[in-house]
Amino acid sequence: MRTIATRIRRLVRRMGLAALCAAIFFGVGAGCAGRRSALPDTGSPNGQSEQEADFAEQGRAFDEEQELRGVLLADEVVQSYVTGIGERLVPSDLAGEADLRYFVLRSPEPFGFSLPHGSIYLSVGLLYAIENEAELSQVIGHEIAHVVYRHSLARMRDRHAKATLVQLTDMATLGIGGSLANYPYVLSITRYSRAMEADADEWGLRAVVEAGYDAGEAVGFYETLRASGLATLDEEPSPTATHPTLGDRTASLTGLLESGKVSTVDGGRIGQVEHARVRDRIRNEYLRLLRAHSRFELLRFETTRLIDAADAASYRCYRGDAALGMADDPEALALERAAATQSELTDESIKAARSERAALLDAAAKDFARCRELSPESARAWRGLGLVAFAAAAADGDDTARDRVTVGSADGETAVEALERYLELEPRALDRRYIRRVIDRATEREP
Image (tube, rainbow, N blue to C red):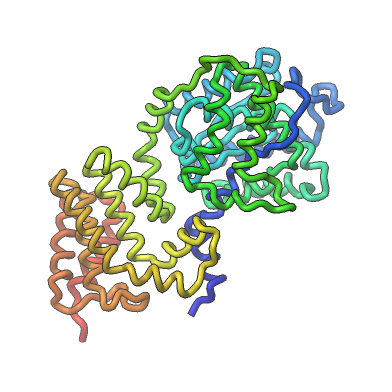
């Protein structure tokens, strides 16, 4: 039997759960005295040291790797939206000095990071978690500040970060940066000190105000994130932690506003409608990513919320996928719950997740049936019904019997009928070979 530690390593590699909250890395603190109007001097004639130039070169190689591997969201409307906010935040006297580029990563986890040469990465999960444009402006402003202050160069000069350039080079040249599960690793080598995070937070807030955004809404981003339940891992205080909790961060930035250190104006831009349009554009991508990353419980929660507002076939199928995934992989379900509640993954928690199998299969069957009712020609509905029937026919539902079905069972026959219909509707389905194997297993007879 696999040990708990082995299970964790296997599941985290597959799910990328380390990105869940390690990536929510915007720090707070005393802040800088004021917003800088020029890039800090590094002592070289062109304002860039040789060491920083090397680091920037590897950063650009990292950017190219992401584009080649197809992990960037290819949506010009979303790209233009994010870039437009960034351009609005950069003051005119810095516009020609900071070569900023913005990328949206196809990951459901809410995170963002910046690299020293000016690339700023935001995830689909982060854009979806944010409620309005003002909140997003605080996130982007914070990351711009890290580039403006050249924090990465300062990090490279301390003992802990001496290997950063080598690590980033490896990611670019060996290709490991192309896997979304590796982004927590990228973040771990670009983390900054509390003082650097404090500078970035205050610079970002000043940029938000000067760009005309509502400062109160911008600061509210941290509360939005905490209320969403996506950032619980960032909420445990620690004397050695690089980042304070989201609650501390909210209090610190609110204090800057209330003290008058950062002036505000009434009627600032919120951008609720504009951001809602972007969320609508990325919703299906977000749901697909949750499914692909085995974030089944979160997928089920989000689709339930959507179904309550509009009972659409696609939402029913996604929720059916979530319930089926939870039933099929109780270890992944137990790990997701452990991560969300900051508890340990134990044999007992896995056993508890496994005990829900029958109820989850029943829920999945109902959702797929409703999806088919709303859209009779939905290939996804037929596929889901077939896989649920196959799972129900599997002997006992344990790990060793998952691919065996009860001889001559009605569920086995239902599985074959539904899956054959799926292949009729999707003759070029990418999982055609897998579905054929399932059909063969459902029809084979034990000796």
